Image (cartoon, rainbow, N blue to C red):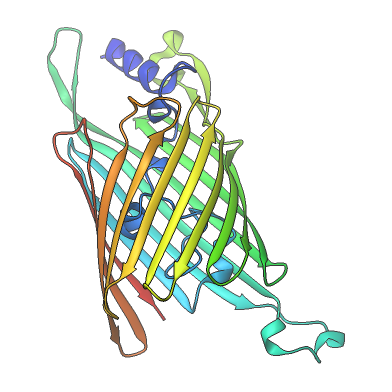
Length: 329
């Protein structure tokens, strides 16, 4: 059993620098957030309309109308799980006494967003050196994030996120880490929006396997890939369509292109589509097409939305389905 654990930890925690970004630490946190974003190919860093989450850009919360609560559940194969939870709020900052004469629409605006991403694998069968079944165990990996943002002008908003990671790999083998995101939104006008973001500054796992492996154990440190993103979005009120694109480079040797669209079919139905993970440096890298839909209805003072996204996973027995509920109040 000790040999199995050693191989398992070495495989997951000691990835070589030249390996695919998908096998780098924190891969679960790069799969997207919720049915809306995943349905649009995760090209969301410049999207400032609708229900927002700072996962895609720490500066987005200043554009949230009312309060937004989101929760989503992913249906995955191979006993994997992936869950999302988020709350975003926009509020007006009090002005200094000498500024009270200014118009209400010129008030200073800030926003806050916090959420959780939970991932894991269950029903893992443990075996000893002779192949005997030693029972089942599971893994759990989590990201907790808090973001604050401020509107510095009607065109520019900046934000920062603090992210706490916790990974329970096996019994006494756990790791935690803290990372940061910084981002900005620049509104050219009501139609065009630009964005930039740097993600996973300082994010890393530190492993210590000596509590289980004793003298055979070791201590390792695995840094997350550093991601740099730029994005652009265009809202056409005439055609009731939002189009967004994003370019992401990483120190793991990838340059990822994303594109997505959202069409407001009726007041109560929204359609989505997108392409994620198109690697400009490697055409063999499997990109991920996606589709999505939302059904929206007002219930009292709440605007409720049932969201769904479908993602093709080429090397998985089944494709990915994400189902979520969003409430705006």
